[in-house]
Length: 301
Length: 229
Image (cartoon, rainbow over all chains, first blue to last red; front, side):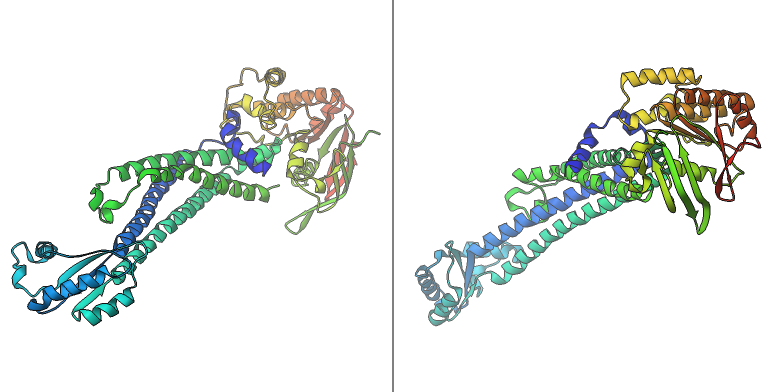
């Protein structure tokens, strides 16, 4: 543990001359920075997706879970009476906070997107809708269905379960997909840094031989490579994260009426999460390079 | 007798299924001077590598500063190498660093690059005649300058032992004499010196300057030579 801490500290405190023993390699340096930046950018988007889908899953679940609808289909002359009976039944049902029959204007507004504003609702045999708002504990939907079927034959209770479940399930899976993407991005980052570190170690076999000849310990040789790759990954991830956060920031938002696509982004304390990406990337690069260096150096006496 | 700085006992070394060295026994006393000779491919470089822990004997014992090389982990080997200055025929520099930094490399890797050590570096560079080449890169040096830079690097830690593998292989006679004088001077300071060379004229020239033991590797075995030189 003490060794690990000293190795981590060496990344930030190494003497300048120890960095110089490994020759500068412009191509792998640029490649590592670019890869880290691209991976960090993708991680920011995946994180935004995971957090937004989690937020929307909760929002959809809560909104739909608290409301339900009774639809009454009856001949026009019985509609008012059945509606009144249904409202009475609902008002005496434990767990129903509020029950309200939609007005003709409200029902017309619901149909407007499909049939336009000139639909003569009053002349059509449209079912009457009753909007129910539940209390925190909710009501017994099976019991309510039985009471409604006994007293209001044309009433159908829709507690939104069939809508809510797939929506919440889809959002939860989307969130899982987001987190899995972040893990994959982290794994890919580790793999790419390992490959780049292996290539650098192989390309510098002669340097390693000289360092060994003059009495360099493995920790010293490894530190020269680990420090270089960790700092490159950290810098690249920093750039990618800033660009990703700016891109998320300028995504269009529609505020309260947001849909899924316009809801992707960070809210409040969620902005802290992407800031963790550069240090995590640095940690991944540190571990990957440390392991690669130990393996390569271990194979040489 | 003082404890040998390097001791090989019945050492054999095999590589790729073939035995390169067989039944080698030798003690290098502190302050002694040895030449190691033999034809090309006889195993001189392999022998030297056994002497600084770069290779481990296939059988037998190699003791470096009284410690069995098999008991040394890589960090311990690194510490041994700080006490053994090695001069390779091909010198082995970091070509992207100036000569001064290459010579100071043993100090750098051991964390001893202090101001006092930097002062030693200047003195050492002057002693090997490279004080005006401090900022040159190794590829810009001549063969003789490279050998002197390699010697300076081997000496910067003030090692107990100096192992030189064909140090005069790429230089003219005058330069080889100069290098030899430097090595003899170091031996007179108490350093143990072993020079692997196939240059018999160099050995003959040394005999007038230093009491040296001449060893020859022949048919995979180490023999005491000298009477015929």
